Length: 336
Image (cartoon, rainbow, N blue to C red; front, side):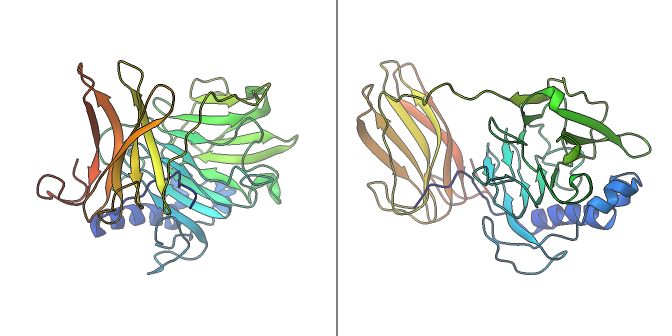
């Protein structure tokens, strides 16, 4: 099975309720969100949340209404989320996260879809705040394509990304091309929000930032991906590690003599039996890229490794989260 690039975590009923309440406020009170800007309120058909299982379109308890394709909720650590064609909600937690709401392999990524990308925690996600600031990266384009471009309808209203908690002091947005390709428009009578338009050549809405104002296309919070490699990259050595299930490599490190260590988690068996759900693992390769060993660590719950470090004697240490008893009793939720 192809390895998944995204991570998910279970929320308690109370945490999930807070998130859904926030999304409900976007739907029922969007006049407040957009400060009575009638154009942007018409853009926002936000009666759109099904509580679904993460990474699928299954749903139970129709909380708001009708057309979410994917709902993904992040872990307490760094996450990298990739959406799918159709409308997505991506809600991350603490950690410096990467949020991509489209299928980048589509012919026109993001066309015809409205995605909600919530980096969190942030003051705008009131009720879902998890205290510590994070630096999130929102991908609205790559070296080949802008996302959410070419939509049918007035000014691109059929496809865009809604980013309610973008903070220009700590977050970044990646766009295709260069700054001259874009126009920013303030939204609301108080001008405390921003809409991003692609000059296509007529303005084509690609993103709405309800809580960010005074932005410039040349600001450090915008990064432009306009370079393509002149040739295909060459690899001295490439090794593939996997099981019959989902396997995620999350971090890599080297010791003092050049051995390479990869850590992440797996739902399968990487040379050892899976303890249940997701197991953390560490794989060691020598400086020539040859695998030396793989160690799998887990409980009956969800065990993930996010980081790896070494001491002066090249002893290896990993850090992550578990929902099981990994050397001690469960305190509650995800333990580190």
